[in-house]
Length: 101
Image 1 (cartoon, rainbow, N blue to C red):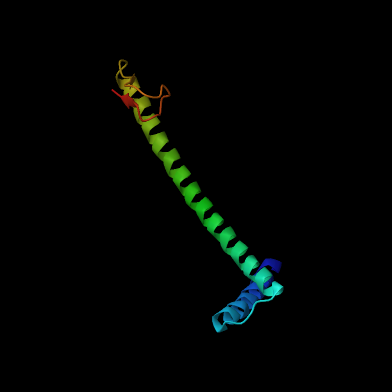
Image 2 (image 1 turned 45 degrees about the horizontal axis):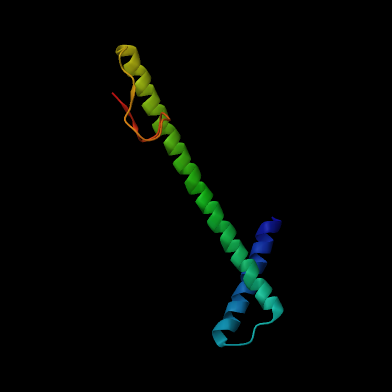
């Protein structure tokens, strides 16, 4: 509740300051503070959106990993000779240099 009221007050003040800028009027210290608050709000929104995108990618990679591991486990049960083959680069399974054979 408080955040929505604060957001509305900042939005109105920001509109007033931007009107002053478009008219070419001189800005006061209070106007500059309002601009900074508006900027911080936008940065916070951008960070929140970026975090959501990262979370979505992380979930997708987790699902891909589960499918690959499930497939490798199933194949290993069918074929005891089935394994990961190291072809160079990083020696960590899961890196792009490990391939299923």
